[in-house]
Amino acid sequence: MIELLTSPEAWAALLTLTALEIVLGIDNVIFISVVVSGIPDEQAKRARQIGLALALLFRILLLSLLVWLIGLTRDVFMVNNVAFSWRDIILIAGGLFLIAKATHEIHREVEADPDMRSNSGGSAFFKVIAEITVIDIVFSLDSIITAIGMAQELAIMISAVVIACAVMYAASGPVSRFVAEHPTTKMLALAFLVLIGVALVADGFKFHIPRGYIYFAIAFSAMVELFNVLARRNRSKG
Image (cartoon, rainbow, N blue to C red):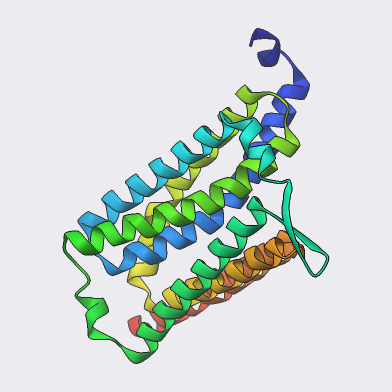
């Protein structure tokens, strides 16, 4: 452990992996911000805390099961000369879940479903936690397999994951409040989830979409929406 603290290579690996884990965590933050927007503020805060705690727990648990996790990347069956591993199956299922969830929420927003406005109570809270748990598993799997490919030391991987989850927790509150205060940003966030879901399904079918393209699209669209929010605010003042 002392050698890691004094090794420039270890620090470089930690910084690189932490930055990557934070970027990969954007998907998680967006999803959590969207699903908690339909429940009361007090429950939303608890749901964010529980969801991000589960994200950290799943990541550390998966890191402690490295041999099993690496085994998930081995092919288990083939369809039309395309091999699929358990990781591929989980990514496809998670991507389809994201697409279905986002599409359902978009439909309710467009149709102005009154049930969505009254989405409160214990059942709604536990439903949100269940949805966050499912998607945490998917994002944790992708994140940790990436970490294994970048770093060799378990201590570095765990440190990067803990730092990234702390940043996710700090960012989730402001992002959730912004989504709740500006309804148009929720529709944009739901569109992001559809895009992320498509990317996960594509990965599962061995068609990798570079994440840089997706994150650039998210950043560009978010910047345009920010300008729209500022413009509406200035018009209302005038």
